[in-house]
Image (cartoon, rainbow, N blue to C red):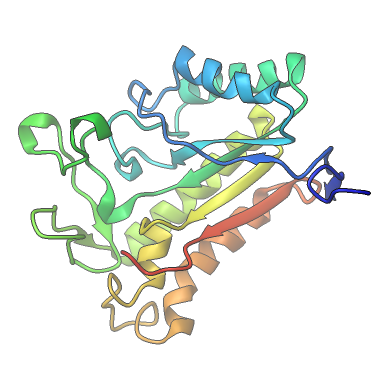
Length: 238
């Protein structure tokens, strides 16, 4: 009797010996967006676990896109260098393919660490300005985000592109655009968070427009031989 779970899968040139995937798991242990030895240990253990694909945690494409000060980012040479060390461990010792989830938290950014309550940071805690499709806070007591202008949209799209190029240089084999959990791409998709009256709001077609623009820009620079995907939520809890 054969098992689909333990059967191989090939996506473009990415060969997976089985269908077991380690999902992205935020560790809230980065320093200034830079992964630490904790991340090497955390991801490295899964690279030798028998799973075929291991995703690094939701990694912001710009600093203000981090969920918390402890979240990773991929916008600087230092961040790229440390991620490259982790991927080299995969290449030297692991059997799993390395993947990374590229993200932007939008209006759900600038929060404290989970073990400190995950509440929005105050200015004396080092909070930062957040952005979203519309100036609508996530919940009572949360920051009111700045409604994104076309300039903001272009900057963030280009940041996704730049991080994708870094991910390719590092040696990641799979990139996943984070469009779930009420983060920025999900905020555009949601009529709860997206109150825009331009071509990026209103109808589903319009609300999908910006995430599709970002995805197309990523696709244009990510090698065809590698795998590219999107994570979506199936419930709207923005």
